[in-house]
Figure 1 (cartoon, one colour):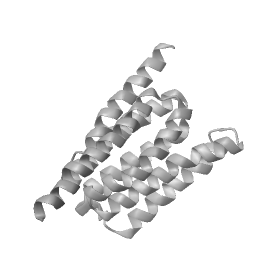
Figure 2 (cartoon, one colour):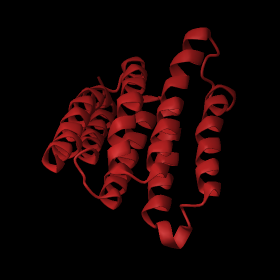
Figure 3 (cartoon, one colour):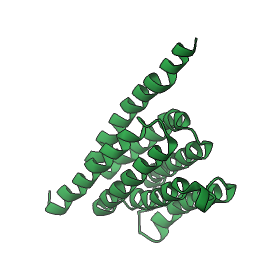
Length: 184
Protein backbone atom coordinates (compact mmCIF):
# COMPACT_ATOMS: atom_id res chain seq x y z
CA UNK A 1 0.00 0.00 0.00
CA UNK A 2 1.12 3.51 -0.75
CA UNK A 3 0.97 6.54 1.54
CA UNK A 4 -2.23 7.81 -0.13
CA UNK A 5 -3.90 4.46 0.63
CA UNK A 6 -3.01 4.83 4.32
CA UNK A 7 -4.30 8.40 4.35
CA UNK A 8 -7.51 7.29 2.63
CA UNK A 9 -7.99 4.54 5.20
CA UNK A 10 -7.33 7.04 8.02
CA UNK A 11 -10.16 9.22 6.72
CA UNK A 12 -12.33 6.11 6.68
CA UNK A 13 -11.54 5.44 10.33
CA UNK A 14 -12.36 9.03 11.29
CA UNK A 15 -15.64 8.70 9.36
CA UNK A 16 -16.29 5.44 11.18
CA UNK A 17 -16.02 7.12 14.59
CA UNK A 18 -18.47 9.86 13.64
CA UNK A 19 -20.82 7.41 11.95
CA UNK A 20 -21.03 5.18 15.02
CA UNK A 21 -21.79 8.14 17.25
CA UNK A 22 -24.75 9.08 15.00
CA UNK A 23 -26.86 6.25 16.39
CA UNK A 24 -26.18 7.16 20.02
CA UNK A 25 -27.65 10.65 19.78
CA UNK A 26 -30.98 11.54 21.35
CA UNK A 27 -31.45 14.86 19.53
CA UNK A 28 -31.98 15.06 15.79
CA UNK A 29 -29.64 18.10 15.50
CA UNK A 30 -26.79 16.04 16.96
CA UNK A 31 -27.59 13.16 14.59
CA UNK A 32 -27.25 15.58 11.67
CA UNK A 33 -24.02 17.10 12.94
CA UNK A 34 -22.35 13.72 13.33
CA UNK A 35 -23.67 12.66 9.91
CA UNK A 36 -22.07 15.76 8.39
CA UNK A 37 -18.64 14.98 9.86
CA UNK A 38 -18.93 11.33 8.82
CA UNK A 39 -19.98 12.25 5.26
CA UNK A 40 -17.05 14.63 4.79
CA UNK A 41 -14.57 12.05 6.12
CA UNK A 42 -16.00 9.22 4.05
CA UNK A 43 -16.27 11.39 0.95
CA UNK A 44 -12.53 12.02 1.10
CA UNK A 45 -11.92 8.32 1.85
CA UNK A 46 -13.91 7.08 -1.14
CA UNK A 47 -12.53 9.59 -3.63
CA UNK A 48 -8.98 8.75 -2.58
CA UNK A 49 -9.71 5.03 -3.08
CA UNK A 50 -11.28 5.66 -6.50
CA UNK A 51 -14.75 4.66 -5.28
CA UNK A 52 -16.50 7.54 -7.02
CA UNK A 53 -20.06 6.50 -6.17
CA UNK A 54 -19.28 6.51 -2.46
CA UNK A 55 -17.56 9.88 -2.79
CA UNK A 56 -20.42 11.49 -4.74
CA UNK A 57 -23.06 10.20 -2.36
CA UNK A 58 -21.17 11.48 0.65
CA UNK A 59 -20.82 14.95 -0.87
CA UNK A 60 -24.60 15.05 -1.34
CA UNK A 61 -25.02 13.52 2.12
CA UNK A 62 -22.94 16.29 3.67
CA UNK A 63 -25.05 18.90 1.89
CA UNK A 64 -28.20 17.14 3.10
CA UNK A 65 -26.97 17.24 6.70
CA UNK A 66 -26.24 20.98 6.46
CA UNK A 67 -29.65 21.75 4.92
CA UNK A 68 -31.53 19.73 7.54
CA UNK A 69 -29.38 21.05 10.39
CA UNK A 70 -30.37 24.62 9.51
CA UNK A 71 -33.95 23.51 9.04
CA UNK A 72 -35.65 26.84 9.80
CA UNK A 73 -33.35 28.95 7.62
CA UNK A 74 -33.39 26.53 4.69
CA UNK A 75 -37.01 25.41 5.07
CA UNK A 76 -35.69 21.86 5.02
CA UNK A 77 -39.06 20.47 6.04
CA UNK A 78 -40.28 21.34 2.55
CA UNK A 79 -40.91 18.35 0.35
CA UNK A 80 -38.86 20.19 -2.29
CA UNK A 81 -35.59 19.50 -0.44
CA UNK A 82 -36.57 15.88 0.05
CA UNK A 83 -37.16 15.50 -3.69
CA UNK A 84 -33.95 17.38 -4.56
CA UNK A 85 -31.87 15.01 -2.43
CA UNK A 86 -33.56 11.91 -3.80
CA UNK A 87 -32.89 13.18 -7.34
CA UNK A 88 -29.25 14.01 -6.51
CA UNK A 89 -28.67 10.57 -5.02
CA UNK A 90 -30.38 8.83 -7.92
CA UNK A 91 -28.50 10.92 -10.51
CA UNK A 92 -25.18 9.88 -8.95
CA UNK A 93 -25.86 6.38 -10.27
CA UNK A 94 -25.75 7.13 -14.03
CA UNK A 95 -23.03 9.77 -13.49
CA UNK A 96 -20.74 7.10 -12.07
CA UNK A 97 -20.95 5.17 -15.34
CA UNK A 98 -21.31 8.01 -17.86
CA UNK A 99 -19.06 10.75 -16.46
CA UNK A 100 -16.62 8.89 -14.22
CA UNK A 101 -16.00 5.80 -16.34
CA UNK A 102 -17.15 2.99 -14.09
CA UNK A 103 -17.20 -0.15 -16.22
CA UNK A 104 -20.83 -0.86 -17.23
CA UNK A 105 -21.03 -4.53 -16.34
CA UNK A 106 -23.81 -6.32 -14.47
CA UNK A 107 -21.87 -6.67 -11.21
CA UNK A 108 -21.11 -2.93 -11.15
CA UNK A 109 -24.72 -2.05 -11.98
CA UNK A 110 -25.84 -4.00 -8.90
CA UNK A 111 -23.07 -3.03 -6.47
CA UNK A 112 -23.20 0.69 -7.34
CA UNK A 113 -26.97 0.69 -6.72
CA UNK A 114 -26.59 -0.41 -3.08
CA UNK A 115 -25.21 2.84 -1.63
CA UNK A 116 -27.73 4.86 -3.68
CA UNK A 117 -30.56 2.90 -2.09
CA UNK A 118 -28.89 3.27 1.31
CA UNK A 119 -28.74 7.06 0.98
CA UNK A 120 -32.35 7.26 -0.16
CA UNK A 121 -33.44 5.21 2.88
CA UNK A 122 -31.35 7.46 5.17
CA UNK A 123 -32.93 10.55 3.60
CA UNK A 124 -36.39 9.14 4.27
CA UNK A 125 -35.33 8.53 7.89
CA UNK A 126 -34.13 12.12 8.26
CA UNK A 127 -37.31 13.43 6.62
CA UNK A 128 -39.34 11.59 9.24
CA UNK A 129 -37.56 13.76 11.83
CA UNK A 130 -36.96 11.10 14.43
CA UNK A 131 -33.66 9.76 15.72
CA UNK A 132 -35.59 6.55 16.45
CA UNK A 133 -36.42 6.20 12.74
CA UNK A 134 -32.77 6.93 11.83
CA UNK A 135 -31.83 3.93 13.97
CA UNK A 136 -34.59 1.68 12.60
CA UNK A 137 -33.99 2.50 8.94
CA UNK A 138 -30.27 2.18 9.60
CA UNK A 139 -30.96 -1.56 9.74
CA UNK A 140 -31.67 -1.29 6.00
CA UNK A 141 -29.08 1.24 4.86
CA UNK A 142 -26.13 -0.12 6.83
CA UNK A 143 -26.06 -3.60 5.21
CA UNK A 144 -26.32 -1.97 1.78
CA UNK A 145 -23.28 0.21 2.52
CA UNK A 146 -21.45 -2.78 4.01
CA UNK A 147 -21.83 -4.70 0.77
CA UNK A 148 -20.61 -1.72 -1.29
CA UNK A 149 -17.67 -1.19 1.05
CA UNK A 150 -16.52 -4.78 0.66
CA UNK A 151 -16.21 -4.15 -3.08
CA UNK A 152 -14.71 -0.65 -2.75
CA UNK A 153 -11.89 -1.74 -0.44
CA UNK A 154 -12.48 0.82 2.28
CA UNK A 155 -11.32 -0.91 5.45
CA UNK A 156 -12.57 1.92 7.65
CA UNK A 157 -15.97 1.90 5.97
CA UNK A 158 -16.29 -1.89 6.30
CA UNK A 159 -15.45 -1.72 10.00
CA UNK A 160 -17.76 1.27 10.30
CA UNK A 161 -20.77 -0.58 8.96
CA UNK A 162 -20.13 -3.61 11.14
CA UNK A 163 -19.84 -1.34 14.16
CA UNK A 164 -22.80 0.72 12.94
CA UNK A 165 -24.98 -2.35 12.96
CA UNK A 166 -23.90 -3.08 16.53
CA UNK A 167 -24.39 0.59 17.47
CA UNK A 168 -27.84 0.67 15.88
CA UNK A 169 -28.90 -2.39 17.84
CA UNK A 170 -27.46 -0.96 21.09
CA UNK A 171 -29.18 2.37 20.38
CA UNK A 172 -32.51 0.66 19.72
CA UNK A 173 -32.22 -1.33 22.96
CA UNK A 174 -30.92 1.61 25.04
CA UNK A 175 -33.08 4.41 23.69
CA UNK A 176 -36.16 2.76 22.21
CA UNK A 177 -36.90 -0.57 23.88
CA UNK A 178 -35.86 0.36 27.45
CA UNK A 179 -37.93 3.51 27.14
CA UNK A 180 -40.99 1.36 26.39
CA UNK A 181 -40.30 -0.80 29.46
CA UNK A 182 -40.12 2.22 31.79
CA UNK A 183 -43.41 3.59 30.44
CA UNK A 184 -45.29 0.39 31.36
